[in-house]
Length: 160
View 1: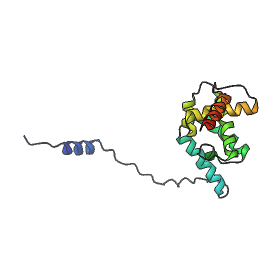
View 2: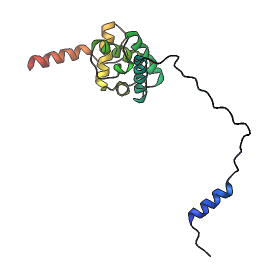
View 3: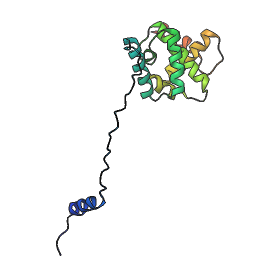
View 4: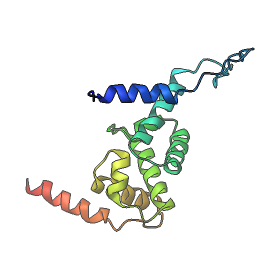
């Protein structure tokens, strides 16, 4: 009895199970895919699409991306700027509004999850939402007290 190697049995099994290929008499024409873009996309459109992809990669669900994209369109800024580290006033205002609207849509979301989606610390998001609701007189969604933080920081800087 000879030695049987695994590759021989495997190769023999593959050949035994092989099915003859079927050839078509008239090959099908290739499928023509139409472009999604009617014209070449502008750099702004490409940047917006890349910003939305970045948010999805950070784990943000579609419903939250839709809310954030709507806020970004209203404020005329890129969605990726909202979740970036930039601190320009229009970007911070849009970030606060979108965080508040997302939290209002699902109040059970924790600040940790929101912080992950926005690339921020959970206390930064809680402060952002509390500041936005205080400025605009909106219903409270977080128990974070902005006035106490302001008093504590004022006392800290006076002592320094």
